[in-house]
Amino acid sequence: MDPADERRDSKRRKEYLNMVRYVADSEYGIPRTCPCGDGIIHEVRRKDDEDTLPGKRFFTCKNYEADGLHYRQPWVVGVEQELERLSKRVVEAEQVIKELSKPNKQIATLEVTSCTSASVVVYCLLYGHGKVCSILSV
Image (tube, rainbow, N blue to C red; front, side, top):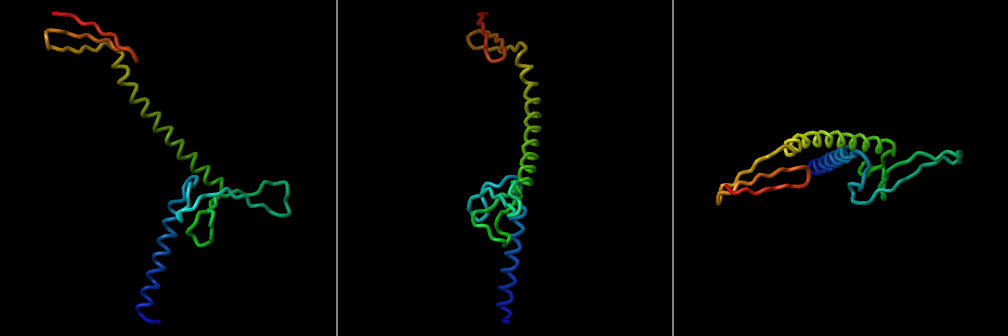
């Protein structure tokens, strides 16, 4: 084999292995689309001798080939990973809500805003969503 052909062949193999690694790393949760660009279908694999069992479920690429460049993920694994991801988001949202409650408590207390233009002082009481303002001349 020609050395140039060997280099091209090894380069193609390396690119293929990198692509397989990228696809494997991106396969997390419930897939929406395959890296090839096609959609995902819900496949149920059944055994012919068992007509009462529902079979094993998969998230599968429409053009699935066993070359490592298309998704075929067990349904249970995808749903577990998606639940884990969503529960982390809920915990993060709870932390944000707790942090936002601190300024709300400060807003509920009396806040004084003074405007010195035209010798007017404005006292605003902020309660939750509504504002009650009274204007006093000095």
